Image 1 (tube, rainbow over the protein chains, first blue to last red):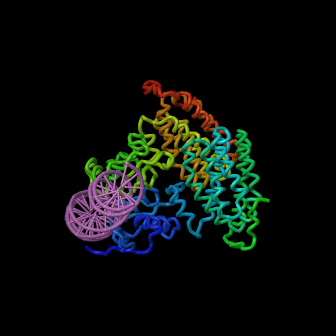
Image 2 (cartoon, rainbow over the protein chains, first blue to last red; image 1 turned 45 degrees about the vertical axis):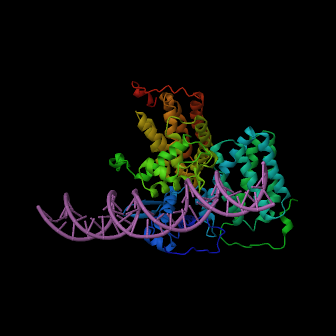
Image 3 (cartoon, rainbow over the protein chains, first blue to last red; image 1 turned 180 degrees about the vertical axis):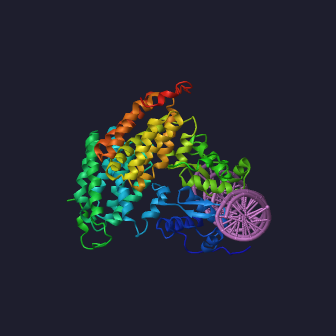
Length: 260
Length: 260
DNA sequence: AATTTCTTATTCATCCGATATTTAACATCG
DNA sequence: CGATGTTAAATATCGGATGAATAAGAAATT
């Protein structure tokens, strides 16, 4: 009895209003636009701001609190919690953190540090436990990396490679890192876009070594190879630590991604 | 220092109806009482079952979906997702998985495997980065372990030890494992309760070695000592793999926890 | 009979307005 | 000045209504 059906054109990314509220608030918190300790506007203000009903706001905030971003207490309001309490391995939280250009470089390095703890160990386990299918998947991803001739497919293949190794551990908890690794790899590629030209040609040998070690069931060598893979990435990231993004697009050299 | 809020320890555990619905459903899913692929009862049935309003059911389910336990689609119902999609490092999810006696031993071993990846690396980092306060905290926890004469305080001290090391890495992502480690340690103690008698006296030397290595900034030795700590635990767990929980209350020998 | 199309019933999505509960801040009293 | 009671801001919950999406069944067509 109120609004006519809004036949608006945006049919694309519309998984519901609650998703919009959730990601908007999530990003604002992750980006520290709303700093830790601050209180969010009360529910009725948020309703007005987003033009949604109370239930939508509440469900969005419930999800935020489920991910440890806010703590909500009656009468006191919903407070933004310190980063220490966030579920930093949650896919959504990670997306909000790295989704924008404000990306906290210190945090990215911390994440990479965790990767370089997890992934070499995962490679070692994969060498022990990988089934034939696992190995096929890993090798296929490697082949795709070698064959890719543009950044998009190279990125996809690289992700597939790391995720395949994670799955090959057959440890469900490690597999739980899939979402995190996926998101992080995207962020790494974005941040290091101007170093990426020589990335694969220099680093693909390390990937190949890891794949071969897994193929042969050599846990020790698999671990070491993966350490090299991540060590290389880390050096690329930390080298350009001060935010001057020197060169964004690299228009001319499409061929440089190709394998030598 | 510490412990001035002990009085609030036994607060009325009535964090609201949402919490009741959430944990009940969460546990039923984690325990596979509602198996993967099954659909939850529709909202109105859940309202009736729990005697709550629609919003409560919705917000609880929203949190479940936020943790990857269910996927909800209009008309299709809310489906339980396979474990592969769950946020296995989420504090709540872990609690539901581990909170009951049905505890999946295979999963527990998988979790321990992740611990034995994370924690030795964390110890090594702690050896490099621990501040004076960090070291004090670690040593205090160790001392508490050595001094504790009942299982409760021993458990608490052991947790504090591991969490202090995690914090001493000064890596926020690693610190994000705090909740998971905390929960897991509780579960480990419960499961291994009948092996726990000699646990500390046998394992406390490993803990002490780790603390000393961190104190001296020796990353390599810290890693190795922590590997020993976890290796010991793992052997205790896997040895009694076939679920015969001998249910040892150990009424008489309180002193055996004490350091030799 | 098989395939396509249409209808419908179920279920989630959202909105609304009212009431209850919580508790920080304030006011009052001894 | 301190203990205690009151208030009010904010969340918690309720329940009814409406909208939207879709899977399954019904109907129509070939």
